[in-house]
Length: 490
Ligand SMILES: [Cu+2]
Image (cartoon, rainbow, N blue to C red; front, top):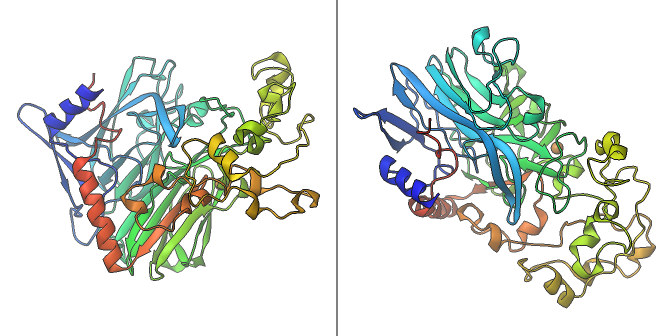
């Protein structure tokens, strides 16, 4: 891997991470067919002002010009992905990433996308909402044969639309393993009014048993909720300058609809998965329900300084690893009830392991809800010493774990505990998720960021310049991000 990265860096002149900053990867074909990618601020090919769409935590997919077509290369493959520090799970994605790398083109472009299947089973790629010939639609079995393991399909089309689109596997269970990516078509004429910052966020959900790295794609209740493949507090904050006009593009592919809430600002829905919406439809909103397979663009002027939360408002989607009994489990010595297996102790499965005959039908809504074997457990607050011992790696200064947060008579209050002993507000990990975009956040912030949650940081000029300088410095030193690993394979 190291050698490959070095090779890529040398071959392509890549010294920087690709995910963070607003810039377009311009690939130029050289005589020897190699790519020389320069990072440039995106300029619309015709007219007005269009900025590159940032997809925090997800790379941009480079392309090269071949015979008048922009050629992209996607590899469908298993991915190991870290949702938050220490939580590495097995997902399926593209080019080493979930979501797959972001594709950005201009309206009118001719595009070729080479899709290689490195999965152990057939797949096919659907271009969601694209008005393209049926042969290119990626519907397995009807518009094309599924791409076999080890196989390849080359998609070619001309793009006449503009807006927020996405690509995804058209095999349903593969979707629930992560197989989606952003596909932006920039309009020929820049939208009016133009924005200064433009972000896209893919909403995904996974059901992953504690201590298990593989999502249960049949589940109907989810305990890992992600923005661009990261759960809070590992999501990278959106950085804008005070009074920037901002567009946020939300894309949902999962089993739930997500009401995405933007703090501190009133927004307007300016686009959907069907493209730009007429101005006459722009009403004030601050929560946007992003349904399954939908996309919503919202716009606003970021005129309210602060570190504002942007999050899904479903309470269960504002947590990590939510499951019955997991609170006590995280407290080490308090442990799970004696005499039960972990699965039972977690209230998740009954009658054996996930694949036992008895459990077949219950694997769906089995995550705690309605479990007949849930245990009543007294949750005694940990002492500070116990907390330090039982949670190595966690940040202890600024941590809100111990007794003071819980009233003396807490155990006599019906319903207690709720958030106090979820994995919740207890554990801050500011240091573990530190990056330029988190510079200057209130100490202990990370203990309160989970699930589908990130910050919109509306920064006054001085602070904005400071964070921007830190990002530039990091770019100059960091490793290439997933998304470019496979550019020249096959
Ligand atoms: Cu949600």
